[in-house]
Length: 225
Image (cartoon, rainbow, N blue to C red):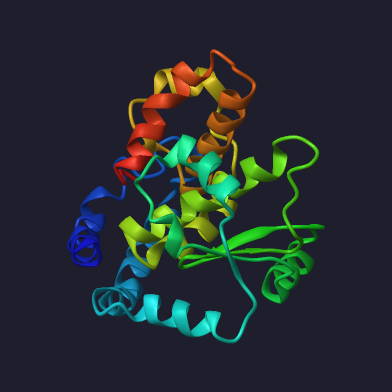
């Protein structure tokens, strides 16, 4: 089971604090960053034990009983499979539009609209629209990468994604950096999601940039976060 693998992999973290994860953001890998990483590693252990027993999947199902969600539409499934293939069970993913949690997040961060993933539910501050270009579908692709990260990393994806916003942000250095990099894991979790967003945009615009982006998309499919 992936949660068990994720739990066992967790014990490699103290030995890889200067390793591949988030390697691109060297300037943020200070001594304080390493100390916080080690403390966080310890605090995450009990949370990852709950991963093994499927606690967060249960929370996700129960939450859907009290909030309004919808499944992905046939059109959405067809489009996002251009990025993820069959690596995600999209029938298990739900969309919560006009999410009050997302609105709280938007207000606290000073944004008009945000999306965030809680386990297998993607929360948006507004309904998605596909009438005016590809922006919202690309946004959905970005968020679905976080669903995939939950599948392979367990609940620690929440902590790592939030930390990524402060330690490196969303910019991964563009195509020039991708040409220098070997693996998806060299980037933080938000940068990984934006690589997928840009791949989808490149596909829809028939850009040759898909050639550079594609190896990283293959690693997303394989869960090599």
